Image: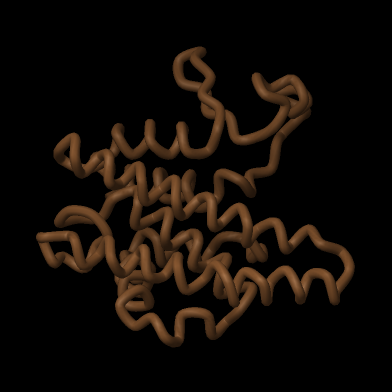
Length: 189
């Protein structure tokens, strides 16, 4: 589980890593001019989802069949689109505008996203409690990360979604994830 711990850290924290410019150079000199970047044997990977997928494959979190991998990819992309909308609200300076943006997401985007997650869980023939397949996948970690951002914005957002809350709890109590979340710096996103 040690490798999965490191992978989980990458997924949950990849957008929040500090950039040690004194040893690596300015962030502007990265391939795309922003983070994240993963360097492996001189090969640089950019873009969070690309890095997440690569590491998921390395650590057995990408599904066991082509169909599972495609479904995991679908979930990751869908959840990431929603998370980007959520995260954008943290950068709105004016409080009334921020509150309006959060309200709009909660009123118009939350229910369809939760319905998508529940439908995907219902379609999982293994009935494992995970989103795809019979074991933890990168899709579950992507959901976990999204739900943390969501509940930072709206602590009661999951109140109506018992199965999704249960999935979030199931992931959050994995010892390596729980230990990491408890020890990392607290951030809103």
